[in-house]
Length: 376
Image (cartoon, rainbow, N blue to C red; front, side, top):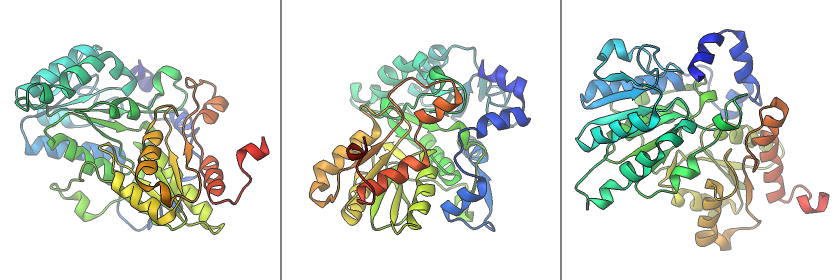
């Protein structure tokens, strides 16, 4: 269904307008917030994922791809572009619209020593295959006393896009991070996407790899080191995207960009914000988070998923358990609205965090604004 819609919209102005509806700033403003040089070599997230897949397939003949439209159509989002021509239909497999079926086949292949990379056209569709992901993939190593490894990657777009309604807009980070036996990654930049996907494919355990549709076309500066085919990023390690001393902001995926923009605004008002790109949701880099909070003494957690039992809740609990005495203000938690995603554009914008929400929360934590209760 999504693939058909994209075939109708193509790459023309209509699709571009839809995808830009929720973007909070111009490309120039975003680049300024990131602090990147315009002269740096750049790569899109789409290209980073594509090259990572290509290089890992070239290096290891046990790696293969499967999913809806990954071959002939070259991927609903063109992540697998060119791979069918290069590696053939035995390693790039188009499947029927049956997530439960092809995910079960992939898990069985992983049992036998292959390294499948399963693409879900959207992670919302992974609900059709969740039994295989959790009961077959995540638990088999433990239940076999370590005799069975399940080296498999489940990847695809996750979270809110634009104008696709409640059933295509959920963030599954907290869902899958709840499960022992799974590793859950959520890249932000091209470096993240390339380095983390390579690590996910090489890992002996099942990895849920949560991308974001609105980031696919975003360009990021990238170094020669990242372009090396041996490059990878460690699973379970966060990145300090921007150093600060007054407040810590944790975020993942698309929300990292929002956090960086908020940090730039806050800096003009004398608040130095440290932005942590989590990268890995499970395992969570609790050491990096707590070290930052012990330095800044304040914390804002940011995610676009539902608030109850979310990633932010887990981060808050970690800080309360390990660094409570360092806090100079209550933790501020920013998340998506606790409602199914509205379809109307104005309501959709209200249902996901915006840059202004982050700025207001940081000011409250730094006692630069009246608390919400006082203004109600």
